[in-house]
Image (cartoon, rainbow, N blue to C red; front, side, top):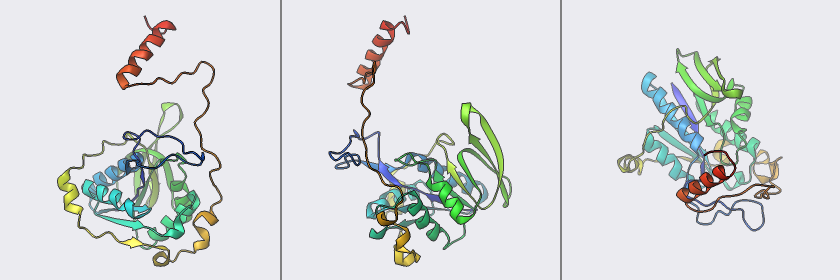
Length: 263
């Protein structure tokens, strides 16, 4: 079974203090530590586990600048067989639909049984997977937290739905699935694995390589653009706890005691 996983390089929220920039159009990105998008990492782990059970290959693909190669190599060190970097100045400023167009064009150059995206990326929109499936005319399921491969024509999937309920479906192959966190436990990537893939060639594809109509991608083609980015004002009675984790925990306990929440 040949599986493609779309991955993205994003700021690591565990390693950064995220703040809004002076113009209010984005977060402050200077000196941020980056890593693979959390949801995408679960998708790669699931793809590897499926390949190990039934055979096949796992390809990771990313749309980004040259630094996105680092994310691809990390996922290859994790166990993916190969990586593809899609990079071109013409792609800068693409909205969700533009990114789906770019990925669709790259995906159509090969054949895959399964295409995974993370349930959402760092902007939280969660839209690329569904758009990609529609453009490829493939069945799609979101928030997938269980996959059982039964044969080469259908698979069984579980979806997390409202109220903590679980839904089980059968879906035809090939298909596109957006993977939810918690579907597995992503494996640790060691130095040995990173060194093993350090010299592996990763092809870089641009707009001309993919034959993309540049009028469909980039900021000029974007139908959605960010007009403001801000931290909401504190509401009445709201309080943000400052300090270390231990200090915040102590303050929270004090607040709960003072409000009668605990004794």
